[in-house]
Image (cartoon, rainbow, N blue to C red):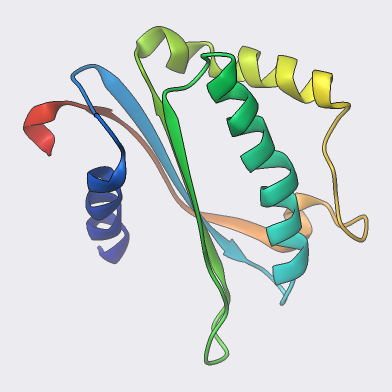
Length: 133
């Protein structure tokens, strides 16, 4: 429930949302105290790819937030990508594939694979309209 509330708050931070935009929210839990590996992966892959996607007009906007570990609880990473329309959304896999290839592949810290340091605990895509704001 708290993630749904958090998603609603995040939607308020996305600039100039208009009808027909689609946002994808993912919340990742960091596993096995691999905070450094997770942050490295998302800063050097996910964020870099979104910056390139924005320049290439593959996405409308993105948000990237890190909630570090505290009180013995694991850290979390919140990822939000907003597409201007359904066409951008439906071409996302193809477009990000092109960008990954152009970057020469995925960068990892300590050779740890994503399955070693992350678990998706929430993922949702939703059509965003002005009436939902």
